[in-house]
Amino acid sequence: MAMQVKPEQPKKIQPPMTPMIDIIFQLLIFFLLMPNQQAGEGYLTTNLPRTSGPVAGKQQKDVKRIKIELQVPENDDKGVVIVLNDAQTFGRNFEGLLAALQGLQSRGLPPDHPVLISPWMSCRHKWVVRAFDMAVAARFTNIHFAVPYI
Amino acid sequence: MHRKARRHSSESGAVSFNMTPMIDCVFQLIIFFILTSQFIQLEIEQVTLPVSFASKPKDVTEYRNVVINLVDEDDPKCMVFGKQVDYLVRGGDNELSSLLKERKREAGEGKPLNVILRADELIPYEAVASVMLAAGKAEIEGWWITTEIKDMDEVLQN
Image 1 (cartoon, rainbow over the protein chains, first blue to last red):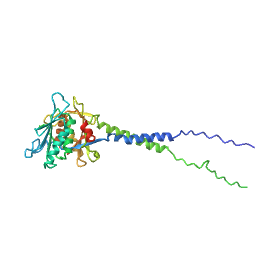
Image 2: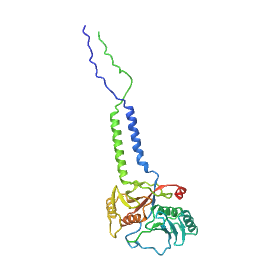
Image 3: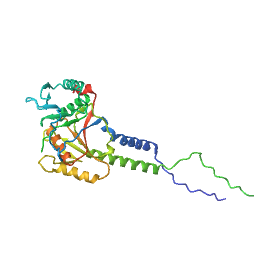
């Protein structure tokens, strides 16, 4: 009696897929989270100077603005000297500036009273932002930056 | 004598599904996120941002944004989408104001155009003022200054 021999079926080699899928999901989660690395950054919104139209570059002299001038000391080009309303000098003391601005607020100035931050051209950007912070902390909302009139 | 056909039972009760299309989809997603992150990095230059407690995180997707980077405190350069742009004020339009006007024209009736400034904390104000003037010439409506958010105490100690 002839015996039928079944031909051997070729063995299928199946590599283990589970670790590969785990790694792929790890990569996916990494790239999903990566765009969020810029978390911790915020934005200050401010008004741009008008460079066109009838009020372009002109100072509004009818309202006495609060002027915060940021000067650069001779011996330290990365430093700052704060001068408020051409009268009070605070050196580098931003807390003093904040107290002075809060004092002006408490005397009845409205929050939308114009505040002009007037840095010297060589003043560093960080001091300009710091002065803006102090004006916002004193609850002023109408804050402008002085720019050279062209 | 009939032999009843044997029902071939499955060798085991396990049910497996084909993983290959799933892996293909996941690879597509990975490639998408890689490319997206590269486009984001092109817009942003490495700068040391000034610290601020008054700044707030905002939803940038509400606007069409132009990110202007000011780098190199000793010789300030204006970088927009990885390319250096002339921003110096000369009375008329410069390269930056022309670029902003063009972007504003492209924005059209859709989302408003917004300028996001990323300036190094030691950049002189002269460079920032020049960028402000260029944006003013293009009559841009929104203007944001990027800072690192810190508490008030940390800012005053800095």
